[in-house]
Length: 191
View 1 (cartoon, rainbow, N blue to C red):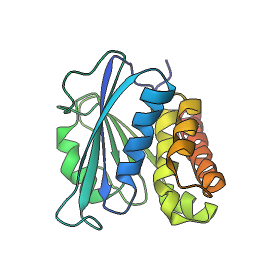
View 2 (view 1 turned 180 degrees about the vertical axis):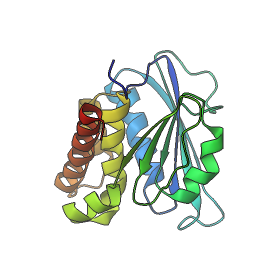
View 3 (view 1 turned 45 degrees about the vertical axis):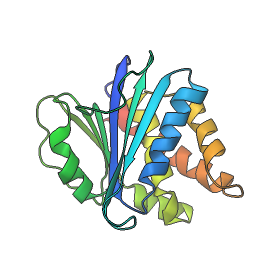
């Protein structure tokens, strides 16, 4: 098992950011990849602040090998933070040995506690290089797939294509591949 991989049985995931960053869509894609295309079980619950766009929102997922009887997470094994506010809000909930995945240009984490591992990617910058800032979430999903190893890259590609609006397939797949490649590079080099 490489350094970034998450052992499977029951993995609790929290994805947080501002409304409008595609946090809920990212959770939907990961859950779909696991349950429809990777023969696992998944649940998802979403939460919005008082306003949909601009306030902190989150999606909570559980991915498991067996049926999930309780859909709420207790201590996320993986926290994916798209914004610093989401990181500050949800970091205290993380399990001591959790994996933290951050948008490195927007989130400045404090020193990891316990045996938590932290991995960052400039997802917004990469999305802008691809041509549309709105695919930042898909870059993060690709990064998640590579670093966590929780769902297969093929399953996530299928879920992306099954979820995104028609006519945006090429753009979204490019975003996924850039995030995935960056995650694999980070695991291989440690930088």
